[in-house]
Amino acid sequence: MDFGLRPYQEEVVQAALRGENSIIWLPTGGGKTRAAVYVTQNHLETTANAKVIVLVNKVHLVDQHFAKEFKPYLERRYKITAISGDSNEKDFFGRLVKASDLVICTAQILENALINTEEEKHVELTDFTLLVIDECHHTQKESVYNKIMGRYVEKKLRKEGNLPQILGLTASPGTGGNRKLDKAVEHVLQICANLDSVIVSTKNFTPVLQKVVPRPKKQYDIVERRALDPFGDHLKSMMSMIHEFMPSTVSRSLREMGTQEYEADVVELEKAGVKEEDRLIAQCALHLRQYNDALLINDTVRMVDAFRGLDEFYSSKKTKLLDGTDIFLQGLFDENRMELKLLAMNACYENPKLARLQRTLLDEFSDKKSCGILFSKTRRGTHCLHDWVNSNPALLKVNIRAGILTGGGTGANHMTQNEQKETIKRFRTGILNLLISTSVAEEGLDIPECNLVVRYGLLTNEILCCLIFLWKLIHSLFFKDSLCIESSKEQRLFEIETFQKLKNYKNLYCHLDQFNASLLNKSIKSIILFFFNN
Image (cartoon, rainbow, N blue to C red; front, side, top):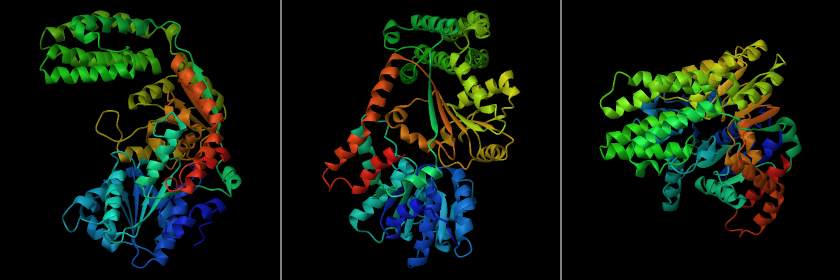
């Protein structure tokens, strides 16, 4: 069967076709998975007793890769088995591997099988001849991918058996959150080392790649804070009263209210209170975290969303008052509840970031064929934004039909795999035209072409350090990529500093040439060329 590989795809698979361990680095929409299917077929045809395993890091990708990529090209000639955590087949994984030419599964299933001693469930890495790792930039730290590759490297050093060839796939190796370019390069080198692989991107067919995956227009909207924030100020005054209720030595150690640092402080404070059996400290810390969550919500979306979260929390606590601490904390909220509610309903103090987001959505959705993704940092944030869209007359007037997509789990705001599939199906078929999502949609999801991606309040170090890495967020032809973020002195300084570094990116290529050849694979240089050419 003709794979219809484009010239740049044919270029990046050459190392793998020679049997070398390699990482294919192509932007999202560039056809990494199709290239992997081609390598897989070639491997099955040319390798004696070939057996291939494809690892993914998210359950929904098992069926997606099987149905849309591997099955159409390989099923007629080879036995393919797709196994996810929802499948009972994982309970006899070892037997299925023996009976299959190609297995597609989550990394955790393979990891479980490697450590399981039961014959029907156990496998060895040496049972496979090719190991394909999707989204391989996650092969770091304590990830399942890294645990598997740790076993691989250990066996290689001990020269234990014939190990499989490695093929990694990534749209971006990332920077590891590093601000400095030399540290970002170290991070990429570490990923290569963890995968025992060289990294390969196109050198000769960049113009072709650019035509297939056009660069999006990137727009950065810096939004000032509210000029007046009486709702947030009132929350902070209540938090100060709780501080005064606690020993002064404790409250002095807490950092600025309404920040992630403050949240980290009160989480640790609650743990310490529980450990020391100091209920006053533990309960005050628990309640302070709720107030801080409200401040963060107030800073991100609407005041009413922040108020609603607090109101629900204290409604659940009313019947569980055990001592004077509980009575004080509940009484403090009850006394201030009406004032908070009135402030939350005052449109004069609404969030300016939402006003800017509304303008962006109205501009794009004036075209009835528009569809887009709105990324939010938290699950709760996605639900708040969804409520905002559905209660916004101006957005409803342009027929925005929004749905939520979040990750799995057990909490109230989590989604099951079937719920995720149904939401994606509704988005793909046009029933929904705006997906409000956490990072679950950033990698691998098979979703239709969009003309807008908004990262709402998600200005990260990694994005600022290497803006080109935004490509990993774009599944197809995203023509505009908008960041709606908040202005602060530190962020502005960081932004100016980072954009200056981006101007000097070409110096990094020269810097790489000075590296000792034994420490740096030549293919790493192509990373920098890839930055400039894309």
